[in-house]
Length: 200
Image (cartoon, rainbow, N blue to C red; front, side, top):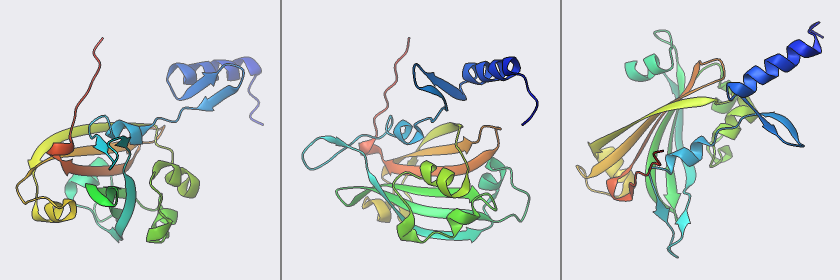
């Protein structure tokens, strides 16, 4: 279709594998790498169910709106002044108890099809949803952790007292071209926070 030789194509694929965009599975083929960003959040927050076993929270989108974001979100998503974005507010729950509060911003019109979804059509994992409905693939992300005191709205959502210590994980996610496609802020009570890293 493009008039490219097989040798050139192989070199291009080798380069994409070296850069981590593709992954080779012996005997199965070469695939687009799918980072597990949802798992990365739970390097920081650990939750247990009623039986004491570790669990991953479920998710519920509580509100969605199309509006102009504040300066911090606008700059993170590299939006022009006055550009609208899709805002999602959701909670993560363990045994139906809210444990994390999230605010998510997505640029329009990249995510117009996501904006058209009803609240009950959202799933626990958003990144597969982005790909299925909007053909947007998250390839990398940066995260910043902050320790804060719970504002009244966060405290109400998480059933904690205003001023209680919370951890905020702020993430900007990028596509394979390096363009930002999601800004996300996740807040949880500091009592559910555990940081673990392996240093070699």
